[in-house]
Image 1: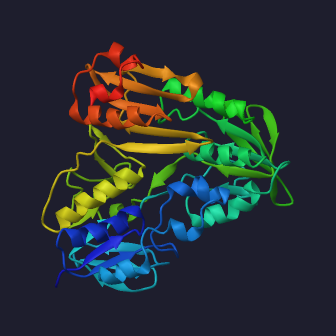
Image 2: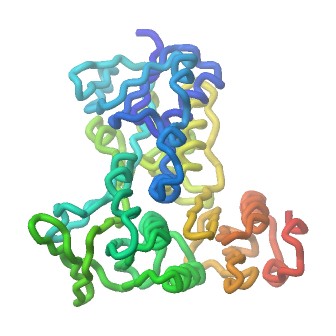
Image 3: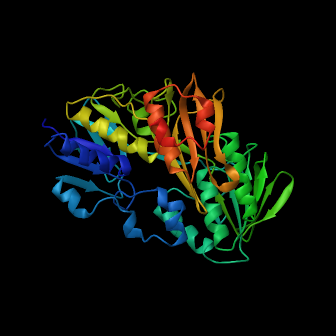
Length: 405
């Protein structure tokens, strides 16, 4: 059998892998399989500019059709890869076809975590993961004042949608099970800042209470019951996290544990099968293992996977980073924070321009910046270098950030 790389998953990692395979000198055929009807597209704008109607669909697509033609890549859309026969080296597809492979890259991403409460299947209950989800939700968000939107979950997606909806005049309530917003990804200082921002904008925050049920009338949502209260709703957005799409790997006997387990070269327990992106459980930059939902991780892992499949293995050692846009605020994060880190605040949150540095063993382990690009850019460099920094100097805004870089 000749060379043939099959990429399962037509997202950010998938399209990056096609490009990187050709850059690394791989000349054999490539097949990209995606279960959505759209070519690879970027997801971050979905809950921001695309939802707000400020971003046309065509701008979402990562590459023009000519890219795949020029890359000698066969693109198969609206088709799901259903199984991998590792002994026969065949991928089976939902349309009944099979594809022989020499190597596989699995970059199947994640799916939304469904909310397990009565009424979850009512009309007017939305999730946000793909283009079609936003196309259904946008008319509600753009419908104007008087409409009531309840957001269940105060992570990035939930708060980004809340911000867009509030800017368009909706009555917005956010329900969060944890004691603070963005608790899984942010420091207490950052959570407190964003709680104030949203409350000042008129968003009602219900913290430390989960949704008990969703009430309907004639099959359509009318309210959410949470914390002993009945919150009226014309629409509900559920954003309570995601689950890794690792079933195809697990069913094939590949080691999985909260995602597809890969080594530092993005190889799975089968040396001919690699994985990249949100679906992977990979070695973390600061030690240990993690599963990361991030465009940066998807792109960088895809580059490493392509190098490995092309016979030029190199380790993945990138500092993770992410971002969120809410109102006029640009939140940028880098590194991996631990609860035991010492937190240094640089700048005054009241000015809406500040950063929180997480110090570990005298060095910067992570940074969270709000409208503070120099702190973020230099912070990433400090994380990479591991150089020791005087916390007092780092907190002093009169000491230029460039002096640390």
